Image (cartoon, rainbow, N blue to C red; front, side, top):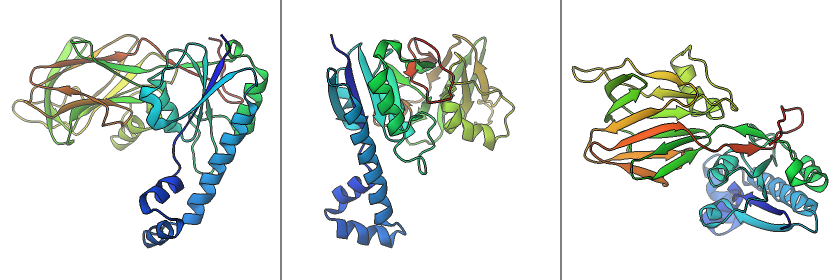
Length: 304
């Protein structure tokens, strides 16, 4: 079967503004009142459209192709021979990752002045050259560790950056935390279990805020880091297990001790979550599959 290029995008801020306010003029008026310049949003949207045109124009004529929005990911069926091209922000790659199983992902940064480029490491022209000259099976990839949360009934959540366990309102959550041979009953605003990729985001923020000396894992390492947010000491709850490294295949388990409100979600996507009820246990560990990210120029490259 011929390769298929699957190009994934998300609506730009300008497109969302027009959708919300119906017209350019109305959007400009409302944004100006909020201190935003619609011309800036439109220029960024144009750069994203130009990047998309560049990528689509470089797909070899003999390949099959598909273009979809982030909102369509859950209903789309990826094939083993797909090459996925994510055109947008770094978060778009994380959104795509949990639906894949080894397909190479090329992250395209349409606007380096606005996007950090942690995961979207290619310029539109660089990605176009890659698509036009390199066969899918020969694309070098960097295998980025993912994290998985699993319930006893088989329900799972996958994430590229981090898994969150806590109360759906982010208020105090009560549970028992098990890490290796250690366990502790806690009350906190939730637990973050992060990969090395996620160590540049939410976990990094927690690490800096508490001036932690914990070594954060690198993206390709199998290790995970966990942080307990705002653990509260009381006669029945402790604050001893508030951070640590899950080395290799180590597992962190949470047993929920509230009647309702418990949620588990990945990469900040709260609407896609697992629900926890009294005495339910969730186990979090390195996922059995990894993101096959095609590294940008000058990055470490490893064959699949």
